[in-house]
Structure formats: structure tokens, C-alpha cells
Length: 130
Length: 127
Image 1 (spheres, one colour):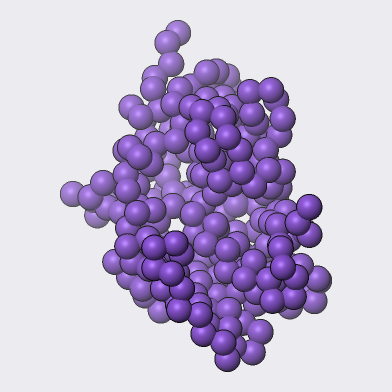
Image 2 (image 1 turned 90 degrees about the vertical axis):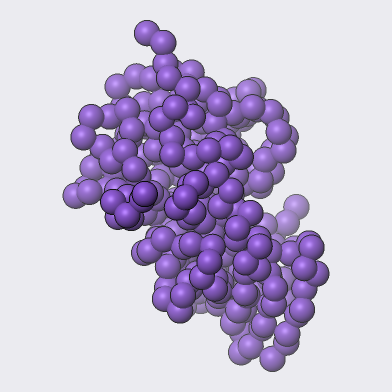
């Protein structure tokens, strides 16, 4: 099964699209790759959020126009990184309208750069968009 | 009270004020607009991850008064109450955690005068 490009699913447009491809999609989990560049930890966190958003978007019943409601227990192992990334999001649980995921951001050698949890919620402004 | 008028080209902040142990920083509108490029066209929204980054930067300024280099170890919690759009004034505040734990900082983002995000951040010593 071919996997769609993140840009086809995300509301983000360049330069805000930080993940390039979906490498793996299994029940409850998604692995994305992100091209080599200089990364700050907020950019790595945003890449993790986009991966979680893609995971939710591919899940039936999840919000397609999701926004970030909360980050929790985010450990910053590397404040900066130069190179490509592998970003994994795993569905944790649903509480009311919130979809909670765990995420890990690693370099290509497998070193952990950032890890934590993110909660997604429907964008209440979605209906206002033109 | 200490007021820093920061380099407009190099800093996200137009002004940083430290008063009674609390740091208040005003985000440059042009910087907020840069953060929103592509996020989302026609309906710009400052990404939450970048708001967390701004809170950490202001928190590091607070800790920087006591130690020269502070490195963010963890975001214990960062919650978003409302969207932050680039057209509204964005103010970031940071203060020592009420728990009194060393190197823990509580920060918040106010947009249009209303709290839009809050975070609890833990720092370590820079290596």
C-alpha cells in the first residue's frame, strides 16, 4: 500500500511542513522522516506534532483539522541537531475530544533527541475558515 | 526594574523587562509573522511548539540572572487555551516556579491581553 505524502494530508504549507514522508503506518503508530537540516528543539517538537497530527488524520473519527492542546513530559535530550530525523508517534488514548499520542524524535543512528506526549484537539476556528 | 531594548534583527523580542523577579517580553510582530509562514495559509496561527520555544527563551533569561548558561531539560507541561494569531500583541512572561524548586520556571503567553498558553519548564546546568 502506498502511503500519502504528508503535504497531501496536512493543512501546513511550505516552509511550515517539516516532515517529508510517511515511512511506516501501523495500527496506532506512524513513523515519518524529515530531511537533513539544522534543527532546533522547537522545530523538532513541531515535527513531532505534525507526525501526531498525521496519525490522527489517518485514524477514522479523529479530528482532521487538529491543533495542539498540550505537550507533557517532553524531555529535551538534544537542544539542536544537524541531519535527518525519524519521528514516531504512537496513539496513547482518547479523552473526550482530545487525542493523546506519545512521540520520539531520533537521528538516523537511532539516538533519542526529543520524547514526550502531545494532545490534539479539533481546531474550533475550523468552521471560520474561508 | 531592568529594561532591555534588544537588537531588532537578532531577537524575537522587541523589549524585555525584568521587574521583581518576573520577566516580561514583547514578541516582535514581524517575528510572529515569520513563525506563521505556511501555518496556516489564510488563517495564520503561531505553532504551539514555537510558543513553547519563546517561553523557554524568556525563562532562560530569568535563570540567566543567576547562572550564565541554562539549558532546557524538560517541558513538564505546556497547555494551550486559545489560538495565538500574529496580528495581536504577544507577551511572554516567566517567573520562578511557585513550588520553589530550583531551575524550574513557570511561563505564560498572553495574546490580546488574555492568557493563551502556560508552561512549566525545567532547566539544567549547561555542560
